Length: 276
Length: 296
Image (cartoon, chains in turn cyan, purple):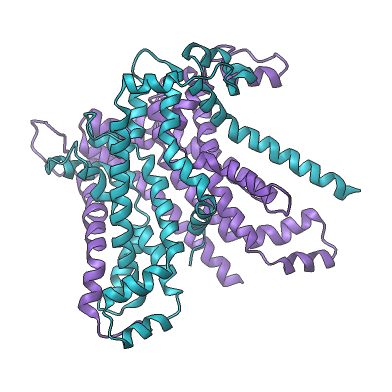
């Protein structure tokens, strides 16, 4: 008797939660398809989530009002560089810490662990001061270089590599393969899950990067999307339809990746909580 | 055991990442401490001087920094418990063998992939003043018309809660996924044993789920707390610290000081204060988690 009531009640709770978490997204999507003046007017009723006369006009307006493509390319370039170089360098470092024996290894690994708890916010002021002295403001470089090496990524690679069976590497070693060749032919192909996790975590934090670009960029030329939408928000006239169309296009790359690889996303995030 | 005899190669392999960490994390961190002990101000005619702990004395006596500290604490003390309990409840709902459960997991997690700047813009509309604003309309609906529309983001009492709600919406999915992984790691035998011993639903939660989830929850609380102390993006976009400093935070004040007023020294001191809070919490977490291991 009791059992029969529990399942409908669970679904009721699930649906209620889903409604709370999904409705702002529905509001965004529906608003992006509506005439500008209707977005706010209709937002207080169920019509907020339903575009009665849907059109792509707002999307066209975004492109005529700001150089969206330019911001998108900025974001893609910055994120692509951080991701590509970060995966390579951090995984190699994780490998050296997990699998090779060398002087200073223990000390340097403790340093990596210590550095892990320093958040960007705690170093933003001096980092800003350094890059200003170097004349690096308003460049791509300043948005990429500081974020390639990542202590947490090294740590995640380290914990994965240390759990891998040794037999494969030993076979390669007997065949006379050097460290670098062993890494690329044996380790890399067998470590796809950790690469996926690190890539996803990096992308999740970097795609929305706001504080640092706000500090170090002033012109439009190298600014990424999160900053561009804040600027667009402050650009009169305030047209909610255009703003939401911008928002939908800005989240589309990461949202579509999430929907395609949602299992990997969930696993990647869960990996942050499983500490050794 | 690690392989022997590959010293120089191994060091070279780890060198690029290590150099990056040294130059862009450790060095700036040490510099933050050093700069916080100076009077450095960009473009100032005054000579650079060591001023000792003067900057710290000054910011800890500065009403607007103390106000930001209190706002930040209020934010932490509200968001962390609410978000953790919500994430735990949602994870427990999802940790069941029911149809379509995977879809709900996708929906609950979706806000996490939304950049905070976009989330902030959407929630500015949600908190729009007047009866048309979604939040006003919702509150009017569930209070059967008793609610009178408010201008949330320009209301000293409501602006900070509005930012809290925005942050909870975006952040809960992350915690939920971590807790769900923790729940799934609990052995089913423990529940079976508890059921045989006659434990009810509530007792199983209290004596099996919570103790088994202890380290996961400590971790989740720590991460959420640290994130909450770093609060900046939403404030910058939704309220710019206003109205009347009702939503300033440590980072917001640090940015104001270092970048708007060019006072690098005092901005550095503020970020060092934030780091000390983060460090203290991390040490506390490690201590509590290791105590648990000793007991078990």
